[in-house]
Amino acid sequence: MSDPVAPFRCAVLSVAKHDYVARGVASHPRFELVVVADDPDVPDWIHERNQLFADSQGVPYVRNVERALRDFDLQVAIVSPQAERHCDLSIRAALAGKHVIQDKPLSTCRAECERLVSTIDGTGVRFLMWNRNGLPAIQHAQQQIAAGAIGRPIAIHADFYFAKDSGPPRGSRLPGYPPMDWQTHLIASHIDGSDGGLGRAPMGEMAVEGIYPLGYIRLLTGAEVHRVFARSTAHFHQVHADNDVEDLASVTLEMERGIVATVAIGRIGQASHPSGGEIKLRILGTAGALVINEARPDVGVYYRNQPPKEHRQRRIASENDFLLADNFAQAIDTSGPTIMDAQASQRIYATFEAALKSCRTGQVEAVVL
Image (cartoon, rainbow, N blue to C red; front, side, top):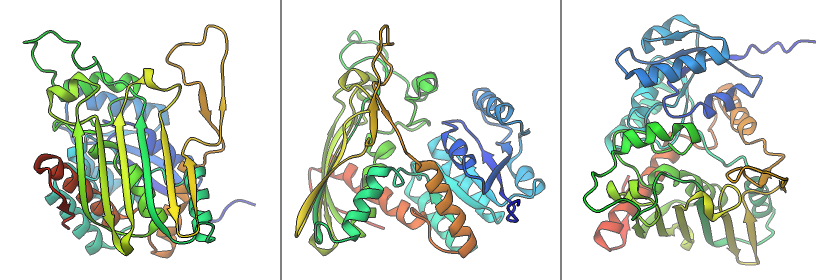
């Protein structure tokens, strides 16, 4: 017997950065990709990426966002352009009455974050920031904490080191060589997936990847961050040093209910780890502790003539994409919350905004909303 519930029809508003969000949403039977769209005046390289993705999905590519939102009987917009365009496309979709799934980061600008939250609140559409909270290890940790296995959480440490390269290592270029242009480098990095900070404005790892460890901490504690202290540097990659953004940082968080959290985050280079990087959580409670390896469960794959850059450790049994999409479908059906809504995303943005300010001032900084 066929499912009587028709799938939500989705527009993919740009895949300038990546197409993994759109593919993740499409993995769920409640969602159907029906059109790819972008503004007509975006650069040719964006049109090319959009067209390739549209062709791969067998859907049209429309060079007019408003026409696509109007003419294709849509319920959902999936937003993944350059970082500084995230909020603009999400806001336009929400004003057209479409529910929004957006890639990270929320924005590169506080005013745009505030405008997005105001629009989502005013229109009543559902919003989901794509995240990794559905990974098996994170889900298991949440279940253990909810069951009281370690009592009340009082401290968390998150290591979030991505073993990805980002061009020449720091110090490998001759003195006096012109600094590397951020966006030009990131466009070229698309081929190996190391272009997470794509956009005109240079972005360090706190802005690019910080949503993940902060998302874990928020999920597992249910507590808000009040104050932060942070240190950062460009330790590994020339492009970060040339553009005065960090590829390595440490952050201390003072949170509600006296909880203390720390995050060590960085893009540490592919040679540093046999797979995706060292990503672990250590959670201390009033009655015990948990140590969580985000990559588990996994299997090791080794064979003759294995390419040197191929990951040895392979994640298995991960339903993160399906679980996020399922959470979003339920939120639409019930007008309920999502696992990471616009307000939570804004708080994460504000936390790392304060952390970056702390890096400049050398002082503890308040998280300002």
